[in-house]
Length: 186
Length: 329
Image 1 (cartoon, rainbow over the protein chains, first blue to last red):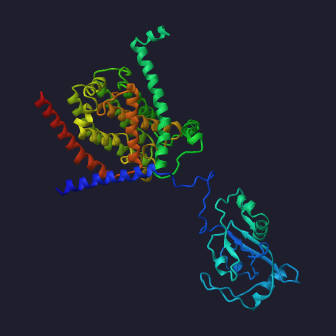
Image 2: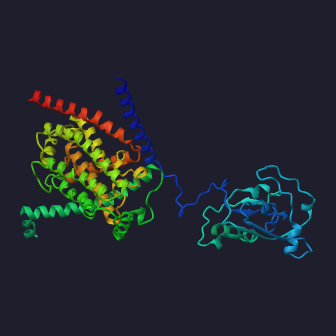
Image 3: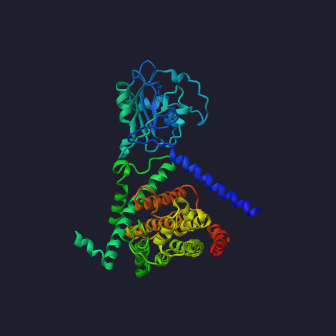
């Protein structure tokens, strides 16, 4: 008797299964049809990193050239160039700018900005080699002034490695010039 | 024109024309079913399916066919040359014969023979041999395993299939498809055999799924376990022929099912062939619906269902039918 009951239950489950797929069949598709539509819910998307500008001057990055991100990056993707106002940009300036105290990766607490950070420094270039980036986000975490964020270039594609070597400072300035155009290009 | 039509009275010419028509239908049907299957899969999974080639992806099967035709035919080292190349041909060739005795309309039948049902059953059995040869000739362990499964499965499921067909043949007292259809036209919808033989219809449909290697009984070509089963080593049109044969056998079993159980070409308002095609493609859509609903069964489950349920049930059904016929008489 139990065998027959079990079989009946199994047969009923088959019909239930058909009902499920039948219902899904009649409903509209939920995938985004790429060339004609684009995804919109990008708040949590982690693309490559981007510089964040001052709220009142979209040409000027928040970056204080403390170089924590460059030091922390496990893949060595980031290279920062900057100089002290009055000093020449170059290797000598780089040495001067290097900060030894780097907070432990993963610690959410921001390091207090120490005296050296308060020296005004000018960012000359923020080169990101996205080819080797593993999107771990440590650079975003260690930044003491929240100058780094994840971009939302979902449809980023290129034919050569050079396409993924970004100058983030130039991106920032381009974006300041024509925000709509850059979004479209991305 | 009339002279040309008179040529058709010659049985040989008639047969040739019927064969050509059937082969055209098979090729066209292959293109349509590939498209429909991918669309059904897409819709069930809430995505659009093929969309880019032609309007709504309509030309996708043509592009696929061209790709298959253009591919190089490769034979693995150590394969049996004759068996390896004979298998896809042997798989595809009997399909045309299987469709010959099936009436698509009151007069639209390729070969009106008394033993039409037997002809279809005999020739569709050849497919197992083709799968077996393909697996054996490929010199590949996955192909061989697929072939072994195909043989075990087909041998097992042919029994309930035959028994359920036999019950219908008992009630209609004929093995001729045209007569079986005619016997279901007397009282409209109610005279369809599916109402007098519901169990036989269910058993026939399940066995037909297994015979055509459709999911959830697609063990001979189980992708996740055997890469592609018996046709692992076939490229280009070698694979294409197996593929075409599979879709054509779907048409054959659905046509037989609609003739035996659903009244064939009988139906109101429309000409008979539209009813027949409608019934066939409805059954095929149900088969596709099954495929995208059910997971593949395990091999012991597959054989258990057959030997422990379908065969006893179909035997009981057959004996019951025979008794009923004698009592009524």
